[in-house]
Image: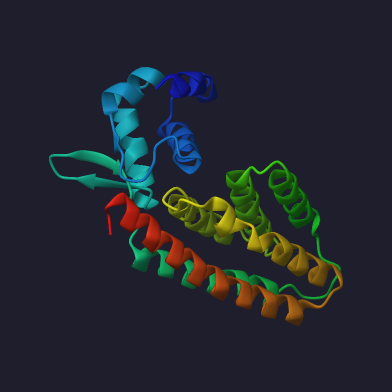
Length: 229
């Protein structure tokens, strides 16, 4: 838990459950707590210097976000998604992300965030940091959703993208998973920059369909190797 001790400064003067949840959410996203791992109240509480009640409230928040699961008489675990969960994540993404692009209105669009995410992904790829490419890819889609200017939609999709990170930690070949989408993100960005919204929506829809198939295949293989399938 030495990494969590370093995170203690993030709590500031008040150890609120929301701040503890933010720290744990980030650590789950990074793979510090992988899918299927039991979270120890004693170890985490000691590392962060927070009360048991605060920690349990943070666990409750993350369980509501579908990142943790509580098993009676066993404790709290990082959630291990099913293949059906992965399919549902992509159904949600398709509905929301395509609707955002469809509703953009007249160009030009505020695309600096998308451009920064594309650049970040290419830098990570050149360094062969494939998990970094995956992080940049999620950032790209988060920035795309943000174009809608809806706080509620942003909150919904932050939860969806956090669940998607659980999938990444089971897949054993992140390069194979993420590399094909470097050029496709760039293509979507270029198309939006040109102002061709309908073409961008078509590209995005095909992208998400292809990504769903590849992700399900890779996830099923990962589950089989881990003995969870």
